[in-house]
Length: 106
Length: 106
Image 1: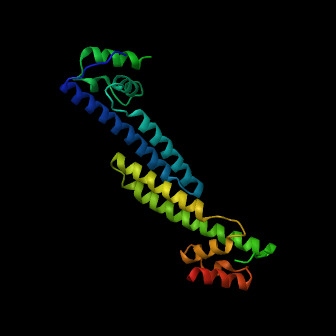
Image 2: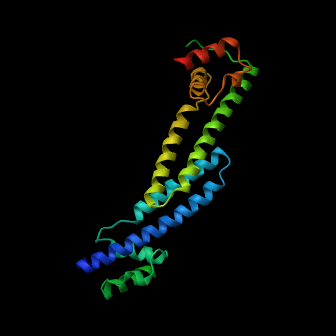
Image 3: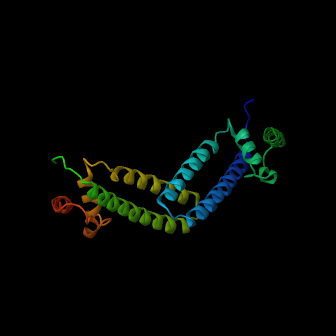
């Protein structure tokens, strides 16, 4: 991918979209955590929740990489997975939005 | 510590006490997990719960070591921390119970 320039406005828009996605995905993890925790009966259930959180944290840490050099593909992944909607990309230049949608559809 | 012999009856009693303690301590962790989880609002709260479980799991794994060579000190720790009561040691030889109580009081 060619190196892209990000205007100040675009940086604000990209950060906002990134943060929305992070929040939505974490809210979904929190909802699962609450549901799992409500069913804990045996010690093994506790460690299963720990395993679940370990996996989620690893995934989140890897996915939410806010470097401009990888941001198009990161936003594309978030769009593809449903943590972002197209409307959330408002404020980015049209060619970036097209790139993100194109990557997301792959 | 001198190497101790464990009769079949004592092994059953020791295992039972060990399992009771494990269960009680895990029940306490589960209660904390449920209380913490009920208050989750921010993504950081999720990761704090993960840190809490990581720490608890490490502690539990280290503490609950069922080798006869270390069992007196393990049971002593559990007695000291309140996960075992003296009555739970019933079935062990009197000298072992005294050893456990003596270690627990240190």
